[in-house]
Image (cartoon, rainbow, N blue to C red):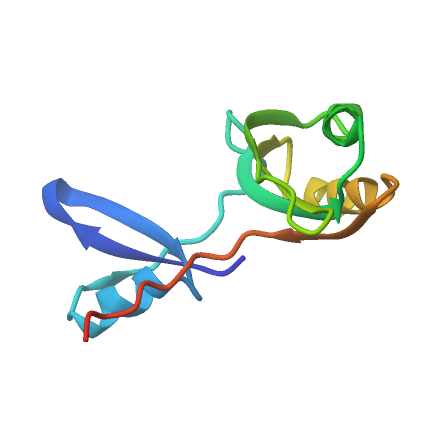
Length: 131
């Protein structure tokens, strides 16, 4: 992902994905952009990413998805399952990847679980302005 940084209080730099709505708001508010880039190699804790899996609801789906995630060598930081609607269910996982390249393999493995029909990376939600 392309990233951009903004100087904030206390000499700290806030880093956002370039397409993040917050980055757009900070630019519009006149915040000073700071050049940033990914460091070579994974950070000590790995990379955190939130992925969603949409599937047909069935017994053992949660167990099968978490087993596939673990088999990829990926740690689960948090997990949430929305109640089924019309036999469809959405699982949300925040995971810690060993490196950036692991995301594609993880998503492919999750798609291979029976009943899973879509896996995608979560995108930031843009809040609407009050009218």
